[in-house]
Length: 187
Image (tube, rainbow, N blue to C red; front, side, top):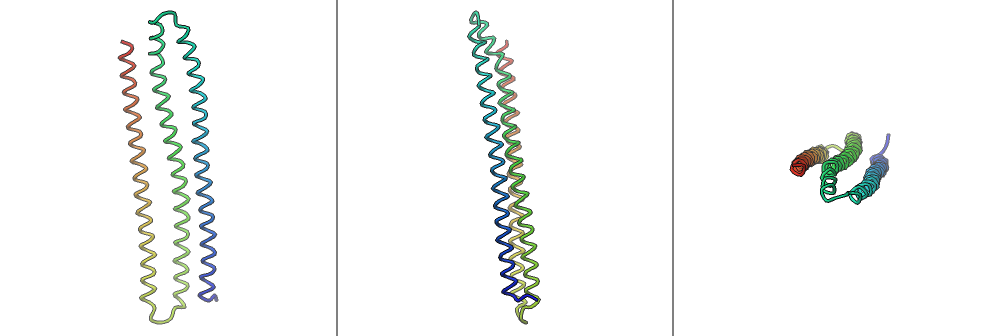
């Protein structure tokens, strides 16, 4: 049978180990998301440079102003579609990274809460008579902290969903505006 100080010492070491593991997981996940974001932007910049060069060559080869403006208008729709695809891909990377970060944090917090409650139960078995109120209050504090975390998680998820919905709506509006502009330019 462990004494209370030994139980707390073991629990503290376990908690520190869990926090280090969580920080490592969160850091690795964040770096992976940043790596995807940077890689995507580099590839997009490279493709954009190649497209710009090809478009520039086409425009310089135009024989008259009419052909020049026709070529310019022909580039409007593909450019708008690329911008929309770019926004969607960035949103996808951000959403996936956020989901991975939330999943890791939720798992760790759930496990830590379980361990703390187990420790409290174990310690209270050996608690002196008359300490029931203090134990109940401590359990209530832990329960309230868990409820607060669950509410924070729920609110964060709702905020991310709202951002995704707004980004989707903005992308749709941009696409519609680009289509209208292209249609007007062709007339």
